[in-house]
Length: 225
Length: 230
Image (cartoon, rainbow over all chains, first blue to last red; front, side, top):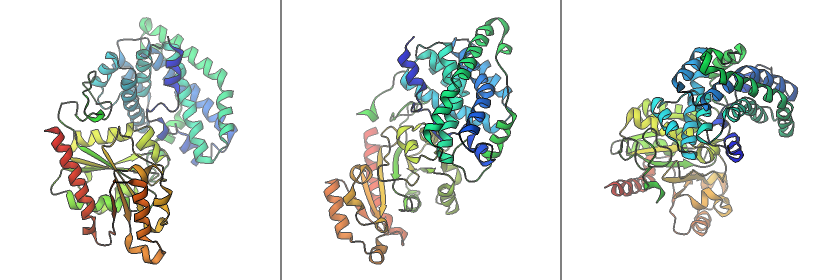
């Protein structure tokens, strides 16, 4: 397992399309729920323990190499009520798959691209990419969990003109939460072979889904989601 | 050269600027148009579509910064059927989407080829940006940089990657030069100093047939692209 590969995959500059998405932050800013560093921290903590936990579980399960990547993908569809968020997750999955295949060529990634020419859900692709990079389920879970907070934090720097040092300090303060979420995700993923996909976390964040639907209908916006 | 290498591990979506589609057919030529806000990129795209649509199978990808204005302008002007125009959202960073992280744009061009292809030419229009914004060679085969005389006649002298390295530099809105005090001869001399032998076109689209020199440049690019396939 290569620590360097983890840095490459987790780097915000990894060219997988994330820069165009705010992770719900743009809708939350418009609604007045995120106005500065303290409310950004609340938003991120909430997203981490819901969307982040679910994504981390899926990524860890995919990284363990479970045959059922199609079933994992279906589980995301079943879990995500918002069509706008499902669409965004598939779009990001497709973009990550392109970057992953170019970076760590692997038959498993090629097979995933064949099965999902228009994109599998991003956490499933993330776990499979981590595996192709020689990483394990914990690495995949950390990447998935971290992305669910790093995306909104950088988006809010652009949306509010928030001090970038404050935004980065918010991420640092979420460190213990990230550890907790990643550990729970990995434990759940290890139970999948015995218990099936029901072992994976299924927390939901209704306000994120409502905000995602509203945001998709805006005529003017900075971010795609 | 990098555009013609064979990729060996792929049988689904292409992963980079391969000259062939996954099914082995040659893909469309991709030309990028970049430049500052308001310099006339969309007007140039519209004029090119009208000039070339009867001889080439065309499509357009726009990269709007925070709206669908450019795509909607092209739709309203009916320069192409709507299914041939796609808008990419760039998350407040147009240069990122055409240079550092080109995945959304690659998807857009591939989807256009899947849905309305076969295509000969795809024009990829950047959102208005700054003088350093250039396209990745992984996204386009050639790039055009569009500036205008009203943005200041010192822009060619200032240079920067767009002015200096673009395959074609367009200096637009020459009809405004006398109103804004821009010296076209000085702009031409500065551009020549920055660009050496790379071509520069001065144009005014007050009359749309004046896009002809740029359309001819595109035709020559396409002819070379098609000849390389033979």
